[in-house]
Length: 314
Picture 1: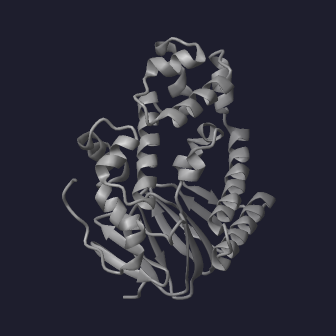
Picture 2: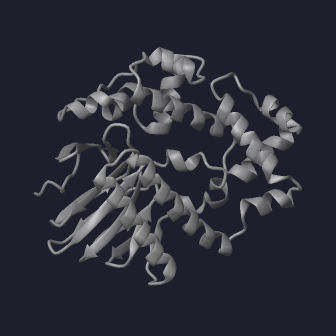
Picture 3: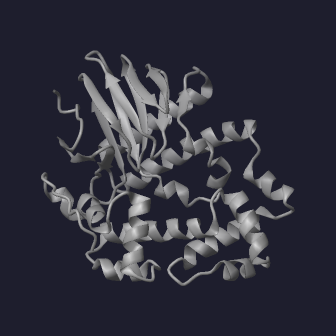
């Protein structure tokens, strides 16, 4: 079995990090202060069914990378690109003659942008680029430039990588919206200025650490809470309550990675009323406890190759 092969529980070490499996859940680790990884490989490999919080993109240079996602097979060849969104279980098999680059990146920096609700459906399904057209060539070139930034590791390289990723999703989004009704048109059909709803999303993001209520946000943009609740879900593809929860959990995750604050303090600072509710909601969102998340993704995890995850809640 090569270093690239894995199955079941355990971890596999790499030159600049490691991967951890618990059942089918894979925890992808990154270098400190980053949320992008690139794995080149030219050895035969097989990855059993797994899923993770990161996007996964494969760029084959030789041979085929064969994925199985949502009961469908994708034999990705040179000149083609497959992007798998977070949370989708998949397998990957590659032969000895394969040379590919596997790119993983966290969705957090993308999810905060106001454009994202309009392409939410696109971002929840695999994107398979097979046509050798200008769009595919431009996206392939952007991925190449992103990987160059990754391997050079100049100052601000993580941000530079996301600048290329943003351009990739902008290109994909434009093509998607040509064939689908934009969220802005949905909002217009409800006789609502989309800027009002964008303002509401910004208001929630900036005030998520408070005891923010549906009434307050609805009042902020001048709607009744019932009407606002309906149009917000139509616009964002998610309820007000769920949107607020995602913002709080993402904020807490950032503090877990970048600070040594106690779990209880992080729970309070990220807007949760109790540690018990924080633990429960965090586990629902991230599929692990806050302490496990910190051990995997925090600074200390990068100093050690061996990891034994705690099983108990804080």
